[in-house]
Length: 89
Figure 1 (cartoon, rainbow, N blue to C red):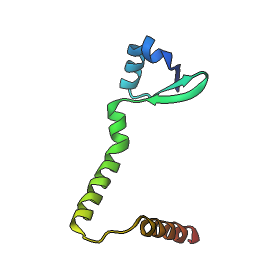
Figure 2: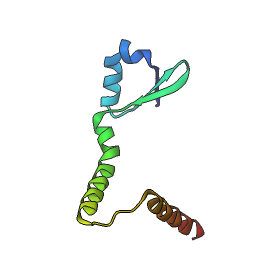
Figure 3: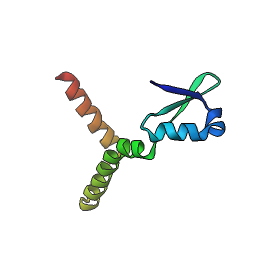
């Protein structure tokens, strides 16, 4: 079940929120009735970001090994071209 709590519970009932996220459930916090943030465990955060960090490390290594540098316009032009090619399929 989705856990939705007011953001004030982060201060007033921290231990309850901590136990919930340690069990693997995210806690959605609201402020003035609107979504404000989501609290997750470090393990969940790592699972979400580890692959991205590995890909960024690979890109850094590839860039260090290659002397070719592209301008911002060249990069985004290539990205747009690839997106448009995939849309055409």
